[in-house]
Image (cartoon, rainbow, N blue to C red; front, side, top):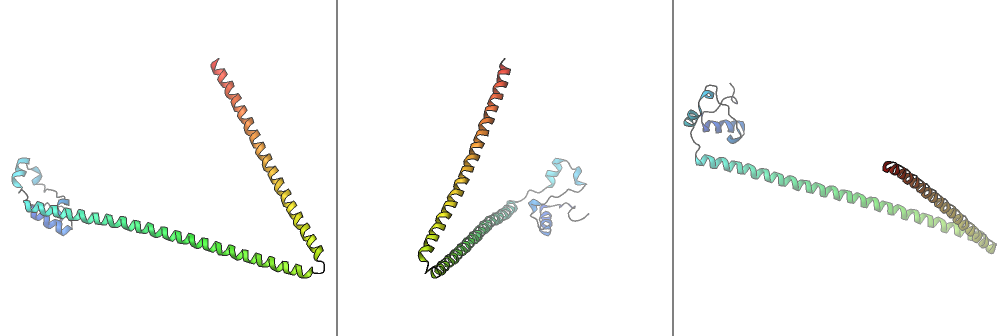
Length: 193
């Protein structure tokens, strides 16, 4: 028989075995030896010593200490979880800010380059067109008007296409609705006959 299979004869032996195993005696499960298994209940009660009040108090204090330690561990785990969630949130927020700031810097850089290029092109055109200033202005206005007209025509065409697509979709939906209603009435009239 090994130590775990041996049943303690007294409560003191049970506590000693529990200390050796690292578990409190109330958590130890002792198996009675084979010769004791045949005892009658009245003989078992007479053979057992009642635990003293101080032993019960000691076990209760141990159990309470274990409970309090577990409660502290649960509270610490919750706090650690909250701290981790807060850290993840802060990290995500910082990454979002960094991304936003980078995008804004890039947009401002592109804007500045575009404006610089536009100003440079305007100065070069003005220098080259000094002799034909009026003609260049007219050509520039004409090109602008043409560009606006092309943009307007393109926009108008896209709007027309969108309206046509919308109209076609509504027409198809109405047609499908009418077919569905007609089928439903056919079914309904057949069932009511």
